[in-house]
Image (tube, rainbow, N blue to C red):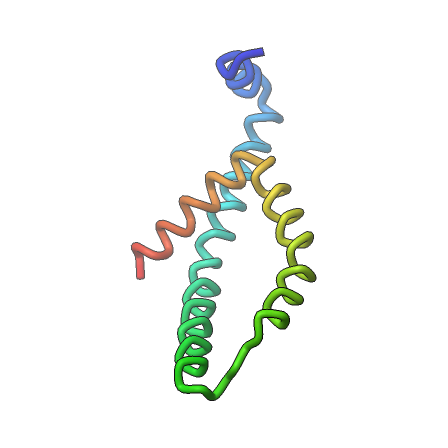
Length: 103
């Protein structure tokens, strides 16, 4: 089954088309709101870098490795479930770009 057949079947059934539009809108809204979180994450990362540079915070590699090993499976599962929902992912990416460009 090719991509053309999949798109044609989605366009022919109103329920599938409505679901795709809702997923796209939800992804857009979440991506637009994610912009604020992204700003905060960049600021926190920059502050941690400055603290480490000044010697106020001294992270060890074992500490960082422990956090990454703990969060790794959760991050991988979240990314794989977002990627499997294509309209949601497209809306999310568009929402991030619009949020960043809008200011």
